[in-house]
Length: 177
Length: 195
Image 1 (cartoon, each protein chain N blue to C red):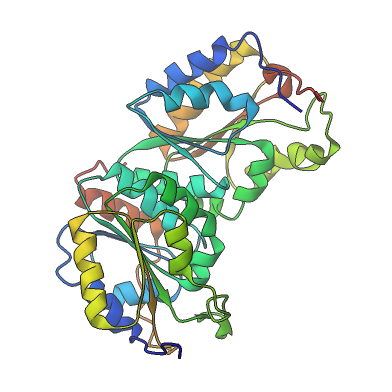
Image 2: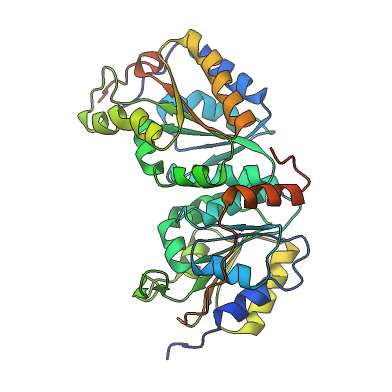
């Protein structure tokens, strides 16, 4: 099984540059194929602290701590990771800090693995229940403006903001044996 | 024969906080937050009343954003057990200014003193060592605690201590529970904009 990298991933480079423009210093993530380019760009950038997590909820604590220390970050995860974060989103409700999340979707379009569907379909509603502002990009042209908008509201307003990156944008994940 | 010596928890935390200078402190929910408050309220204390399992990763983010200052996470065995993956994440990155002190009473003190996994034999210090911490000890006497405290201020490596304490129930000393207030106060003390 392998992901088919989207041949037109220029939106990922643009996304990274946009976030850098917000003085982003920390990129924390549980890997996902859809985030692979962003993870690589962050890892290659000496100005960015790039941290792999064992579970997505670690990223919420991490970003709270980084902000307490004066620095901004972003949490990258797959939609399945949203479920892992639910109780930790209460940290944001209690302390208010910029919590920007980029969520690559599974189970929302052309999904080959039905085990992804339950959490993928519930991810946006689950985040909204916990007070996260959500936007969704299914087309490359929407990614940059939506990411810039979410980052503005997170960093200027101490909001929890998530941009969902749909499977139609990322590309169908293929089952390859 | 196993070593059964234990430190009184308030005395342990008071020793860790002695002459704290520029130390930044995060406390895990429940007793460690009361312990930290009992040692003296401070602008550079971040008290948690929830977010169980997040204390260590808050410390990691803080240590990497404030590299010139020592960062100490004081938490309980139950809170640490809920976020064990954080030890692995910290052990890979290893900020030299980060220390984690688990006030290990081997019980869930806020919920009726049920036994935790450390009562069942789990060695958190061994786990932290395997995760790559530069230094990790089980601490049962105050003299060893003093040298742990010195290492924190030396910022000479990522440190972990499982501090074995009595399963007593000292009086609650309530810390501020408004997280937004605590956050603004903490950031202001670091000279950061409060909004």
